[in-house]
Structures are given as C-alpha cells and as structure tokens.
Length: 113
Length: 111
Image (tube, rainbow over all chains, first blue to last red):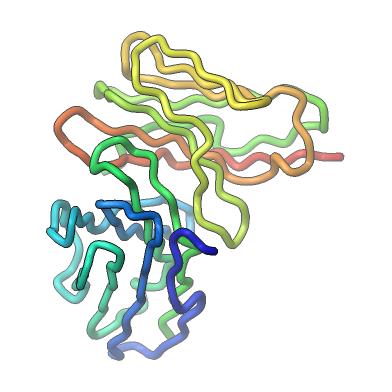
C-alpha cells in the first residue's frame, strides 16, 4: 500500500499544453509538498500546504498552480508548458510542518517537447 | 538560492570501504536530515537530527549534527553494492519551516 502516490509516473507533452499531476498520501499527514528536481539532481521546494492551506510558495511561475481539495491530496496544474519545465516533480508529505521527516512519492518525469 | 554545500559531489569506492560525506552552510539550521535516492525513486529518509552535537546511528549509517549547527556529516561503514545512490543532506532553518536540500553526493560501490 503506497504511502505517497503520484500519477502519472511519466508525462510527455508539447509546449503550450496544460497538464496536471496528482498526488495522494494515505499516512494521515497534515503537510504536503511539491518539489522539482532538475537534470543536475538539485531538489527545490515549490509549494507546501498544511491542512489544505498554502504555507510556502517559492518563486515559481504563475503557470504552476497547486490545489489541495483535502489534506490527503495535493495536485499540481501547469499551464502553457515550456521546455524548461522538463524535470522530475516529487510530491511529499510530513506529519508536522517543520520536522523535516518527509515521505516522498516516486516522482513524475515531465518531458516537454 | 542554494544554502547547503554538500561534498564530495561523487565517490567511487570498493565494497567494504567506509564512506564519509558532509554538508556545510553559512547559516544556522535547527534540524539536519539525510536522505537517499535510488534511481527512478523518490528520496527516502535515513536519519534525522534535532540537537546540536547529536550523533545518531541507523544500522551501518551514522550521522552527526555539528556543534555550530552549520554542518552535518554522514558516515557509512562497510559499504555494500546496494548503498549505491544519491545521498542528500537537508536542513530546516529556525522559523523558515522549509527544507533546503544539498546538491547530493553520488555514491558508486564496486563489488
């Protein structure tokens, strides 16, 4: 039974398209995150939600919009995809906002062509 | 921007050898964590450290929270082939409530 699951695992799409990545956690955690990992493996936080409330919004283009319908789900919608959006996107969750003990999903490899 | 400097960037070692990697910052962190990422997977938490000076072990892994709160190291003893992967340090700064990740140390272990 997967703790943090995100779909799809792979996503190939053309520039200009709009796409969504879904994430669900069954750990009962209060906090969920989206991270972006680039080709050099740098992991950078994009968003953090605590109990459906946006807590952290790093310098991310407005084309990226997270949505948390409930505390077990945090979806990421991306409008007008650009080549530079190609990366692996990880969803994660933690029990508390600041203790750092996060569980990560398997990642979604997004390729924009 | 990147606030954690992790070294070395990569390591090639023989099975059975011990490994050491570290993470430094010019800023004070109140939590240090070490994660491992296998190819095609998300990072998995190995060790979490919450007090300056704390030394914690998890099997063959040992990590320490530096006394200045600006660094941490991870040691792996008697490496085995399944230790291969990328090891990330991560830190949380007081009142910032977000993780900063190091750039990762890629570990290769020759059988």
